[in-house]
Every structure is written in structure tokens, then in C-alpha cells.
Image 1: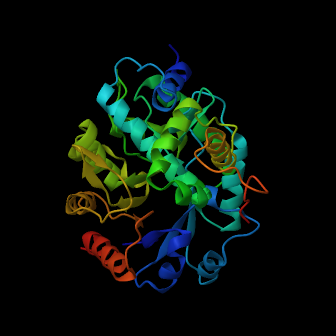
Image 2 (image 1 turned 30 degrees about the vertical axis):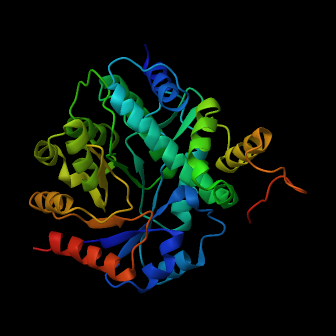
Length: 266
Length: 107
């Protein structure tokens, strides 16, 4: 495996664990949680050891059919510079509309109209950020009516029209297969792997017949199997574990990281 | 309807008890609304741990009631919103009126 290797989502609650965990090659940080002028000391320490720290945004709302909030993009650009990161990212989603803020990543209709809006916003965001930029597939509980494209067609066209890269979240792919009937094999067959920035992995849980992408449970074996399936198609530059709550002991995190490494090491 | 209107209608349905937009599963709209409220409540509990400490099990149902009636708008910061939840709780008598300062500010 080249370039990034195995990483973990940096969270304040995990900062001491990350410093001592074996097998962490890089980290990703939620850009909205940082201020460029006072980065957390533990993060600065990782950077000074030469560890890549890549910013990941959650609030740009690039799929909103309203003018892009460029102040949020400027903040991401500032964090990207402060971390000397070669790549920044957000999601294929919208967050805000009609003056309301969902506080979450909402799915887009897979229509030409929505793709045009997303492409325009991504182009503008990329012109502000000035580094490589990647977009991630989200986990959806809802499906918009009247889809004109499959998710893999939507993502492929997005990369072709903007030059962006992709973060493929395998747990989100699993969630969509379970919850909205995405065909995971067709998805993996349709992704332009040369545009892959890295892969996300996370845990979740089933409640009431719906799979919830909680980032608070262990990674399911079925999700690891999908990572193996992905590895048959490409050697991902990086694989990142996201854990956002119910933090387990370091030994469990280390074991999960090792299982990700095993899944992508042939 | 335009995409902007469709997106706004979906968020109104999920966050502000608006009418269900056509073409969506009613069951999934209900589940998604619950997911959004629970996620939001965790952020509020993180920003104002005193509220969850005081309310215990009543924290989430009260927050769900508050946020459905007064959903968070894009121009309100998360901490302001948490503080307005506290004000609402006090106004209803669900929390005692503070003796001195209304809000504790974090660092």
C-alpha cells in the first residue's frame, strides 16, 4: 500500500491514545473543530513528527441549491494551510436549506439538476482551497424520488467535471446497500479508482430494521468484507478508521486498525 | 418545484414538523428526524453538560420538544442555540432560575 497508509480520525477524546497507538500512519481532523491560530498541542506534535494530518469538513453544504457560504470554505482553506495538508475534503451532501441547519449530512437527489449545483459549488470551493479536494459518499436513510443516475454514475461524473478526488466510505456504502438498496458490487465496479484519495471505515449498529452508521460501534465483518472486495479493484492510498463516540480501550482500536491493514495487504 | 425549494421542504419536514414531501417514505422521514434530533441533542449536551446533568432522562424529550418548535437556523451558533434551550427550560420551570449569571461560558 502506497502513500498514506492506515489512519484514524483525530478526536480530542482520542488524542493521547493516538499518540501511543501502534500502526497509525496518519490522521484526519474535522476542520470545523479547529482554529488555525491555536491548533491542539497533540495535533501539532503529530505534525512535527511528520505525520500527515488531513482536514475533513462537514459543513460546507456543497450540494445546497443556495449560494455557497464561502466563509466556511475560507476557514477550511486556512486549516489546510496551517496543517500544510496536500488535500482537504467534505461530503456529497447538503446541510442547510431554507434557513434551517440540519446539523447533519443530508443526501442529494441523484438528478442532473442536483449534480449541476454540486459541480458549480465544488469548482468554487476548489478555487478557494487551492489544494487537491476530495468528496465523500454519505450514508443515507432517505432516498429522494425520481433518481436519474446511480450513485456511482453521480460520483464519476462529479470527478470528471470538477477534477475532484473521492473518499469512498465503505461503511456508508454498506449502510446504503442495507437501507436504500444500493448494489455494492455495481457501486465498486463503477467508481473511477484512479480518482480515489482514500477510504473511510467505521462501525454501526442495526436498530429497528435500519442500519445506523454510528461511528460508535465496532466495524462489522460485512463492512470488512466490502473493503476486501474494494481491494480486489484497487490498492487504496489510505484507509481511515472513524470512531466518534463510546471510545474503546486502546487495545481494541489497535486491533481494528490491524484488521484494516490486513484487509488491504495482499 | 426547484431544488432549493425541495431541499428546504425536506428540512422543514425533518426539523420543524413540516408536511412530508411527496415521494419519501413516511417511516424513513420519522426515523431520519429522530436521528437528527438525537445527534443534535448530543452536541447540546456536550456544549451544556449542566443541562443534561440537571434533567437526566428528561433531557432528550424536552430537547426534542424545544427543537421541533424552534428549529436551529443557519445563522445561529450551536452554543447560542444551547443557551436558548436553557432559557426555554427556565421559562417553563423545567430548570430553576439561576441566582446570578444566566449562562456559564466555556473557555
